[in-house]
Image (cartoon, rainbow, N blue to C red; front, side, top):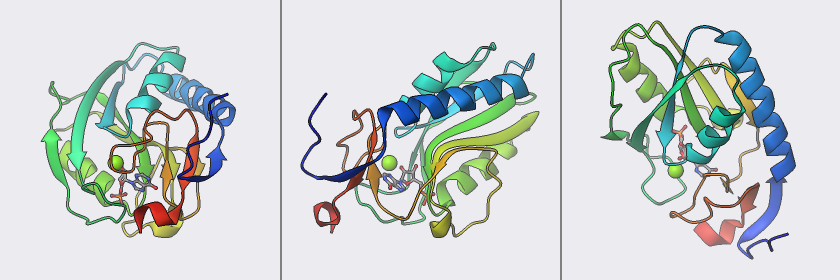
Length: 181
Ligand code: IMP
Ligand code: MG
């Protein structure tokens, strides 16, 4: 057992609970997209750990691609400003696209990406997020697959960072507010 860094107030979602839930999501997605060879679009960087576990837990053929977006800088407060840092490698017209996100907070980032991808005429476009903070939502969004709904606290681990740190933790932890305020 690794020691918990001192900047972490508590573990919110344990490694076991994450793995169990990711397998459930993978089973559901595999059933829903049977024979559709979906394209899983991972939003970097936060989504990379979730995507890696999700894709290996799936039982159907699928492809992956990556998009990098900047919305927060290194801080903990949403600016609502979104920029594409890296676009998809391939055309998605006629493909069944599933956007894979680490967390939906205000919804600005996903709303921007959905608007952008929709113009490329995918056959379908759905969203899978590991975490959602419903109390923070500023833009109403239909989210098709949600791992966990969490309270309004800044969380790190399992791909999520604060100033590029803590992405490697195998659990989701709550960062002590004094670390970012
Ligand atoms: P939104 O545009 O406000 O929905 O923000 C979504 C993005 O903000 C996510 O992809 C994360 O990169 C980041 N974010 C939001 N909340 C947290 C958090 O609690 N911990 C780490 N990153 C977060
Ligand atoms: Mg981030």
